[in-house]
Length: 199
Image 1 (cartoon, rainbow, N blue to C red):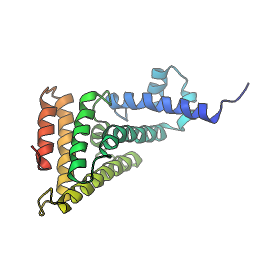
Image 2: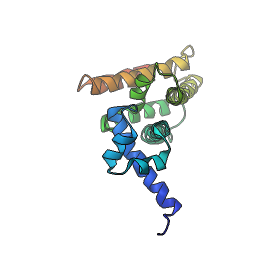
Image 3: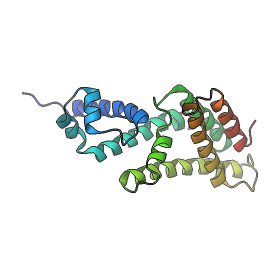
Image 4: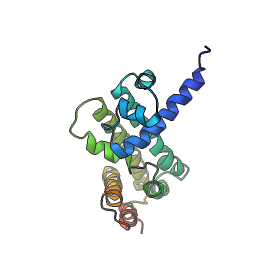
């Protein structure tokens, strides 16, 4: 029996990860078990284990893929804007569009994972924390560029701007998903724009 090519194996693993991201966005990373995903994909548990190794390795791969999906939806569309305030504005618009469009069926993946692992030590907690820290550093760098360009007040702390934007987006996700607040993301967008000095 011929062996599958490396690219075919990589493609099958990538398609498995995509399906797992969608499932975990609704059921949480802890709800993502080998058995649950195998049933969803109609494949054997041993076949799934062969692609990942164990449950934690699978969960970590899924989290990394979710972060990549967020990056493609939010950072990449904004990255072409000029550094500083224009890029912050583009990030806000892309972030809100991401929350509106259902990039993840269950809402903001990282917000959900942050709550899920906030008090659980281990590799997944560390991966979630690292992802949030990286994004905060991106936001802080853009806020710093805006301050240096004079687009934000000289006394404005870039770390505060980053924290506010992240907190507002997380709250907007909760309003839209948990509270079913139709205007929640409109309010979130307005608040995020105010945080960067725009109307």
